[in-house]
Length: 486
Image (cartoon, rainbow, N blue to C red; front, side, top):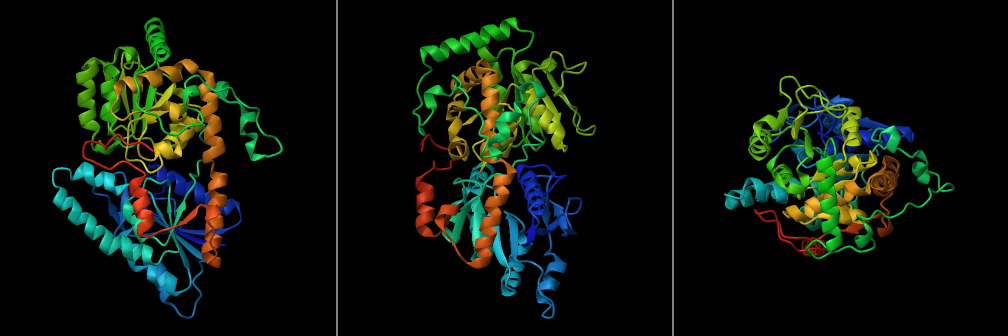
């Protein structure tokens, strides 16, 4: 198959979407398909598209003009367009609105993947001017989204957490798989049990694992009411506190991602004031517009002498292998932006728990990466996390509930190596790149042949799908959403 991929998200630019695109391109090539990639200058692509710095995130670029070479190929009546299917990665990629009709006119099938929950961003960034937010959203839908998906054979989303316009205006909706490279993201040798990866060979299934204590009350169910900690849970939290008091160091909590208001890193910093996390360290890997505010908050919460930050000019400092001189007493460490996947993997593998309080995710790629490295993940029970990672619902906390968050961190830490083994198995079995590549190739084939079946995860879009989508998740509010559950 001849595949065209057009994306603003590619390494060395750092994001879960960029990693997904890179892994998919490699997977298609490994399966013997021809892949042509258009991307921004400086990225790992075949053809560059004129781009500018994203005004909302200076670590990312966005297309400014349509790809001229692609337009010329479409307008040349004497040459066949050398693609069977085009995969356009959105949102943004605004100039592609003018290109997609030409691709369809020349018989190229179009698959649009949509990766960001813009309704949440609208509430976060325009909560003080809702009228302006609604106006911009209307322009976005009318002049960008509707023209784009009108010509699409299918629209892919990472989870059911997506903008209502995806469900309302798309003809067909496909729930994508993640595309995680579990050969790069892997545990430290002492935490890695390679036989657990044998699920790839159905004749050699891995032996069953015991269920960690932290997951036992939650296995086999989806929704859980917010209840106070049980006496057993309270006892485990006190055990964690005692262990932290006696140990040379407390647990290392890790966050990897953009430092921005919608990621709610403020919650993670404030939670360090809880008595049961008195010796815990929080390492934040990444950069973003909220970094300065988070550094100030950290100094307020734990003291200026206990906050360490890598300089922006000097780049990140790798603290995953241990604390360098000058970091010994730090409880909050800002490691800076990391572009190398192997280095990021080292951070994941060295941490005790990966933590995220972000309710804006459409998949949460960093959670899958952390678990592939054998690091259990404690995350908010909101957004895509509730559905994508419901098999580990016992590691989720109620949004804004510090006691619930601390309790789940404590129980995961006490589970030790068993929790790490379960995390690795869940990631390899559910989020590996091989399954994602096969899934998307099957959908591309359906696009080309015009044959569709729901068993492959393709659902019909339209107004009813939009209503069902909105009925099945909390309303997005400026205060972080309500407490409605699945």
